[in-house]
Amino acid sequence: MPSILSHNSDKRSCLLLRLQQTAIRFSMEMSFKSESGLEILSFPVGRLQCNCSLIWNPKSQEAILVDPGDQAALIKEKIQQRGLKLNAIVHTHAHFDHIGASEELHEFSGANLYLHEGDRTLWDNLEMQGQLFGMQLNPMKSGFLPLENEQEFLLGSNKMVSLFTPGHTPGSCCFEIGEFLFSGDTLFKGSIGRTDLWGGDFGQISKSIKSQLYSLDPDTTVIPGHGPVTQIGIERRQNPFVKI
Image 1: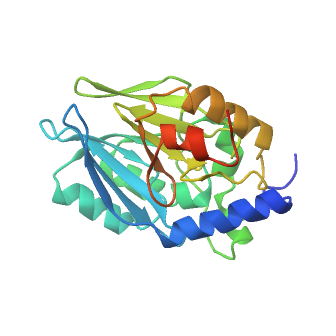
Image 2: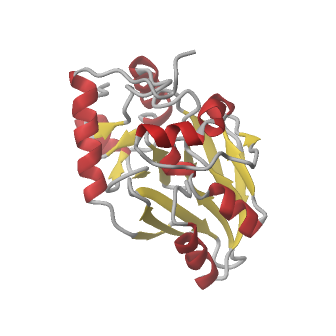
């Protein structure tokens, strides 16, 4: 197995990197309300401005946290301000900018951590990931519960469903709830996730997007791992990297 520090460079990878860097600059806090009444708050955290998201039922105050990548104190403040109780902490993948605050949030809330088994190598080598970006990160001490394709998480009568979408990493997943999709680093506005880092595979990510994401309702709002929102229908028509 190649080192997770290794990566490949080609013209497509360099373009994807530039697009992701642009998306980071345009990250901002976003609030939504679903047709079923769920509240959603997505806000950038950390050096790479990962979109961390809270989804909750305003009647029961039960919540799910997606990708607590950094700034644990900020995330805890937003949970406490709203009086929320975390049912689960789920991850779209295990790159450091999506899991950096997971352990502290797990200890704070008692909520279980969920990640696809395909990203265990990344989870177990958080410290090594940091080296690639000149950062000093502590190794993970907590374990996670394996996330399966089409696994369901309940918020009252609402279901969040995991969709296995390998390609950016071997264990990448997206999460669909109502008319919203949390796409992690699989699908962005006008772009897709990098595949030049460890475990990345352009063929896989293309297949994942076509089979798992482009088949969703075209009006589905996509909240990506970085940058602004988009819609499935827009990406089906306009995304230059994965075309139908």
